[in-house]
Length: 620
Figure 1 (cartoon, rainbow, N blue to C red):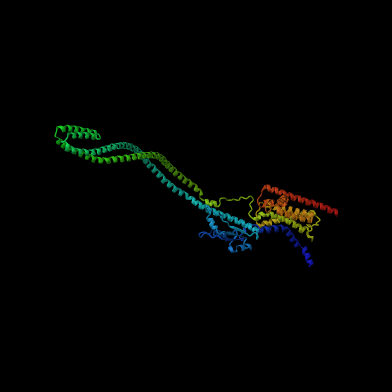
Figure 2: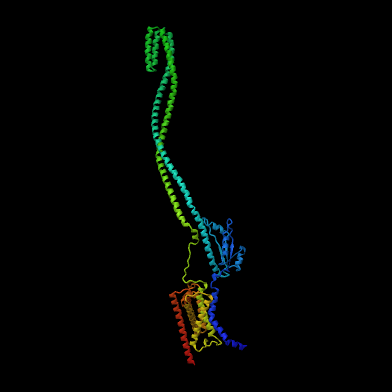
């Protein structure tokens, strides 16, 4: 059995396997990792996300149901509808990586978005970070896209409704314009009618002045009539006195007729009485009566007294008849006097009213001028208002034209056109420079662990005890070239990525492999086990401090300080030139740094080999 083991150990097959493993170690490290995560964002179709719709809807419409159906149609993630009662349990046990919960007032709040009392609706996104943190970050990116689409749709709906309402404004303004036309026609009619009214006011004012003058004349006449009425009162009083005295006269005449023949002395006494009476009577009539009395007295001495008495009696009757007639007329004259006084009082009131009327018409005449100015201003204002409204309608229509398509514009007002510098079409391409560098470092380290520390001494020229040190360094250099070529060829073949320049690509892989192998050789050959430990420490530092995953600015300050002193910092940048895009300055700078480091460590290892060879010769 032991002989079989010895044969296997010394067999060519095992050596080939070991050589293959050593050469392909960098490939194993890079290929399987990059292959597994080459495009994780393009393979989310099986990542399950639950949708919980609590929306109660409004008037039979449910925006929440519409959103849920849209999500179920998407293939970016595996969306599934979940019952609210089971949602938390399914999230907790890892059945779903995340839940999206649509609130019960979702439709109500969206429909109210165009009003003043609008309310922001909240869709709850609940990732299960415990299950897989990176999955929650990836899903979050997808949810952000959905959020953006939903906001755009809501903006489009709200702006569309607002645009429709704004488009109704010209029609409302046209109604206002039509109303202004009616106002304008009314003000024109009012202005025209007012001219007639103003002329009428002027005529009324002039007539009131004439009326006031006429009333003044009437008032003067009634004053004279009133004064005449006072004379009539005196006349009436005298007539009444005359009537009374006449009664006495008539009685005396009767006595006179009876006793005239008896005594002339009584006639004389009668004349005397008549004279006394005449003192209170009309002078003209009095004089006539005196004349008659003297004649009567003279005649009474010459004529027949009886005949004269008969004549006097007859005249007395005539006087009595005249007095009765006068009394009748005096009664009518009393009515005239009363009417004259009433007329005088009424005319006085009429005069006062006429004065007030004249004053009021004067005020009205002045005010009518102000009203006329106001009507003219109103008419002008109506004209200006119509012109302004019509111009406003035209302007609004011109401005509303700008609203055409605004709802679609607000749905996507800004487009981010990506014009990337250094286009990367897959997640794996971005990480390939990092993992290729790590793989070549690990490959160099494993080559020395397997070949340099070979206890069976199967690889004598590569072993620790190899006598030809310079040859051993050269052979390790050839191994590095093989590792670099194998890694570059098989990665390109297996992952199918493109390169900027095929010679640059393979040349970079070889140069990086040579550099890392010479660094590892220097550490292990020079410091032994301490060198192996140092190689692992440097590997760990390069994992964190070379900016291969996260930007170097995001890592702690301690790592940032050693960033510029780590070889992988420059190998990652150099490989990017061959995988992403070539920048002449960066390519030259990083190539020179990597090349110089490779030359330096090659020279160091060569010098060390010469020194060891010299010591070995001396010892021998």
